[in-house]
Image 1 (tube, rainbow, N blue to C red):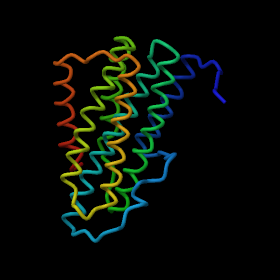
Image 2 (image 1 turned 135 degrees about the vertical axis):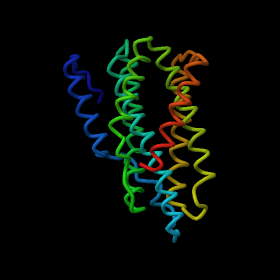
Image 3 (image 1 turned 120 degrees about the vertical axis):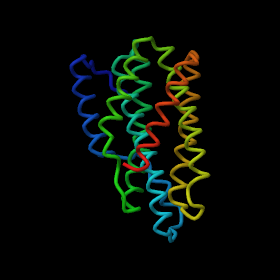
Image 4 (image 1 turned 60 degrees about the vertical axis):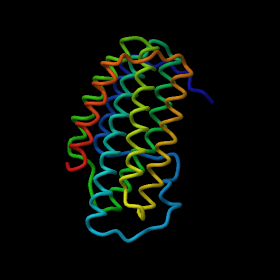
Length: 214
């Protein structure tokens, strides 16, 4: 049954702050089993394990940023329908957050210590997008998901071939991101200007370059 209760701006602020703290602290609950459960385990060399962990840490940071974006865009959306759409997308993305965190633990590694900084930056971007209106905010989602999908596809080339567990997670994430971008496009997204796309790509490179190691 749909929840038709009224949520005041203060309610949404408290809920958003609670979610931010949970995301940064690494607390996430998946609604779907991890795709890694269907994949066979493999013996990785120390270098391969470290490389897989670096890539999965980057992916986890990407999901921290996705939570921040959707949190901001839902909070400042212009309509209830759009707010519900962003909240739903955020819940679906939380699976990715949980899967990547679990895989990092299995690889004997850790999430990025820069997560609070990345979350704050992504939240600021999401807020700006939301204030530009729902259509532009949706366009921001489309471009974000396009860049993330390309980034995940590159990780499928970079992960050790025998690391089937990490590869299964990344492949399912890629499929989900494509679907989220298509859903935003269908809701009436307008194209993101080229300078903004370039700035997003530059920020993405900075994020991936640092999160791999830290």
